[in-house]
Length: 285
Image 1 (cartoon, rainbow, N blue to C red):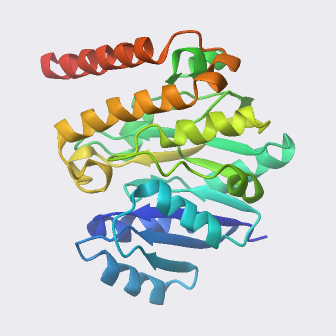
Image 2 (cartoon, rainbow, N blue to C red; image 1 turned 180 degrees about the vertical axis):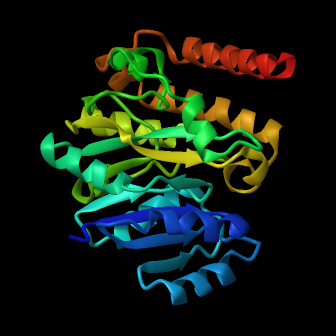
């Protein structure tokens, strides 16, 4: 019955691990593989203590910082179970989520099943966060649209539905993960690495579903210093733009087949305008 391995890269999030990791120790989880990406804080000590406390935790450390794509591939290589769930070191997984994803995987013979993903605000409780996001999708395009390179994983659905792509919090058949693997060329914050993985999986015939009963909640930005945001806001935004352009250029043939008609340059400019608009709304709010 313990058929799932949680693969969780971590970088400089020692203060969050004792809160985050227990939420992934759910029914059907055989073990959590944590890949410490050469953290400079107390991550190593914290994980040693937690591994002594929980028998289901395996710890690996990269000698140098190799980013989350390398770390995820290392976790995939170490996995012995039939399924993998990709977790985050700044997110908590709601109870029974793994069980829901496995049910959908079995009922629909899916290769990948994505969970709902919510983002907490500062000083907001998990309950308040879920109430704020109590919005249902009317159709698949309310959740994901490859042609627009758009995704909203916060929506609820009445029952699991097939989607062209999902959020980074997903369950996948291990054989599928070992076939696709993450592209280690993404730099900095590795923005778009999951989208890259998922559209290549889709192109190679993987069936992807979304089950909103399963839910992963990202902790407030004020609590999650470290990780992909270690370089500061300006560096993060630059990495996001560059990685988006790399993603679009690299996958242009696949994206055309899957429905995207605009060029990499046009889509990158559109992405930049969208980021500026979002930032301006936050400033003016």
